[in-house]
Length: 331
Image (cartoon, rainbow, N blue to C red; front, side, top):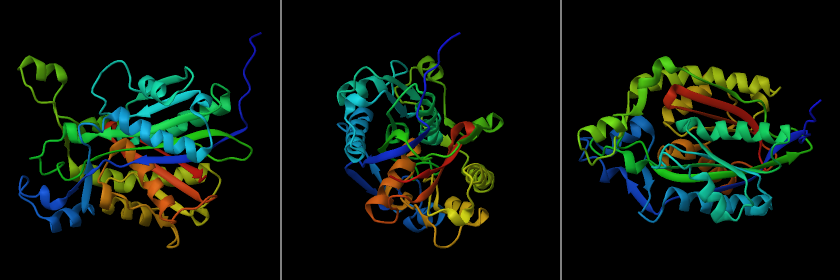
């Protein structure tokens, strides 16, 4: 009979880190190209400004920076990390993944390292994977990073996307815990609506016509809004129920920072108490896809809106249409 490894009884988030790129881009710098206005953008999305990366602020550089902060916050050395999971859709090499490069730069000791492509839901997918790995015994400490440079694949003249997407990186360290720190993940996808958020062209089509422009993101905003506002509230409710708590037990709600109106619609639909603190990082950061949940969580911790021991609902959704949610105890 095969022997099986014994993992930790439970897993928990031990530390959080973030990296916000240096270029601040207010709405006023984008409105002329899309025939819009600051008022229209804020009313439609809640976004006032966003961050774009400089050429030096690569996917790898931003990932390493936020990972180092998360490791320091967790009190864990890079050499103790057994798994590095990077959620991104904007690492521009099909292969190899960026995760092994990040792990090497951090000084990890030959960990399993891989990228996952679940768009805006990628970080929450990574948290679910890392929690399962730790409890199964295939890793003791895992680093989960959400990172994007969406400015590389933006059509600055597209009225539906140019003002939405941005750059940044966030990370968490996940490790063993004596008490439950990460609830069961509720995740899935809806491939029938695959076309609602996607790259505009296949890379092969771009090469075939000799284009020198990377295929940009495109989104059917109204359809995504309707789907996310109502479907994701049900997913959030399921995550709360599977964690064995009620909305009244929650302290913090950290949704994917897609749109302020979607966030408000989900909170109303889930009947969250007014005392629950809600992440609204999208106003200053824009939509950073896989990076948005850890960036928003980091801001709440830094500003005192979330404190150690709080119960937080994380939920993210995006292209695929992929989604994931879980309740966590904050470090």
